[in-house]
Amino acid sequence: MLSIYPACFFYENNSYSVVFPDLNWLTTQGDTLQEAMEMAIDCLAGYLYSYQMDGEDIPKPSKLSDIHTEVIAKELESPIYESFVNMVAVDVASYAKEHFEKSVKKHLLFQHGLTLLH
Image (cartoon, rainbow, N blue to C red):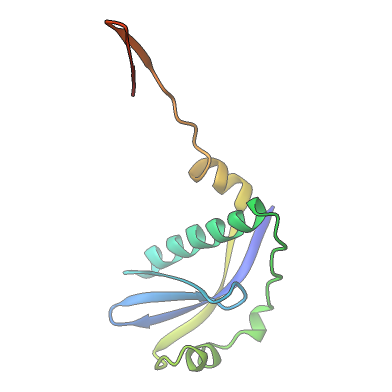
């Protein structure tokens, strides 16, 4: 199931900052727009996964039309540069399975009575 939240993207100082106002002002950044979007997906997945693991209620997302970058910039006391709002979507369960829940394989070697873990 997809989780979808609005995020504000701000271009400043040759990189993009990303803010999720619905998620306690969760932020990330990327040097390019592509990297900022990838980081936004990773950040959103990690945040929502942590909420789920802690058994906390996940905040409801705002409507895209209710988020305004100029208001967010003012709240952050940040100058307004090039900015836009975009929805960021992630399937938290699938993302977590691939990125957060990787199993670690251990090989046991018995050498002269010692057990070595790799």
